Length: 249
Image 1 (spheres, rainbow, N blue to C red):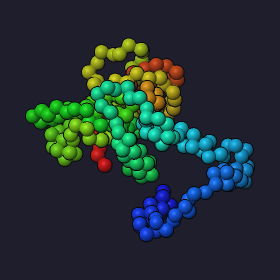
Image 2 (cartoon, one colour; image 1 turned 30 degrees about the vertical axis):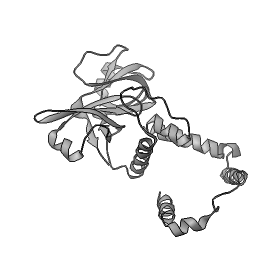
Image 3 (cartoon, one colour; image 1 turned 60 degrees about the vertical axis):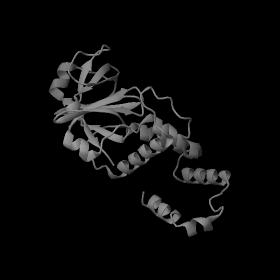
Image 4 (cartoon, rainbow, N blue to C red; image 1 turned 60 degrees about the horizontal axis):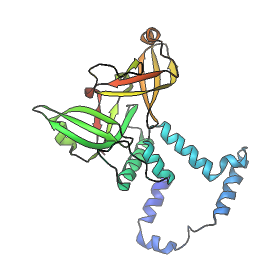
């Protein structure tokens, strides 16, 4: 990350940038051979260290860290993904902003929230004390939160603003079954349990929902034994609007 900042600072100098000319215009074959050499020097098959393999591995790593799929597709250079929502669209610049935000946060890890949704404010309804805010993510999911009017003003919330919604793992409730449960939780996502880590006190579940988004839920191990959730089982991940924290960067 420090090297990236140094390069960025150097390129910000117009005189230095103009002096480069075609300095970065290198032979792709030469670059590939260097990748192969370093891979073999580390004791691996050279094909595992090709640029395309490193690129794919980084994409998988980002998705496992919950970067929105459309942003990962943009990094890979794929065509603009089809969003599942017809209410809001994201420009190329906005996807780049979300990508930059994720990269900066990945290096700092200054939040304890395990579940993060990146999106845009679709609409908000202001009440006398609190306001209801609906967010549409890049993957087309809708997330609803309720915040105070003071927070609404302080965060500068308005329709179309890029924003981050965070939910801590203990605030997510799991419900078994395919049918949407009749409950008061405003946020409901159907997915499949991909991972289960059982601890002495708590058990952690990873639920994958459409858009390759992984949600983390933590329940008490005693309660888990009563529910008996297993990997591969389809469940609903539920959380209330009061459990959602908004962030602007």
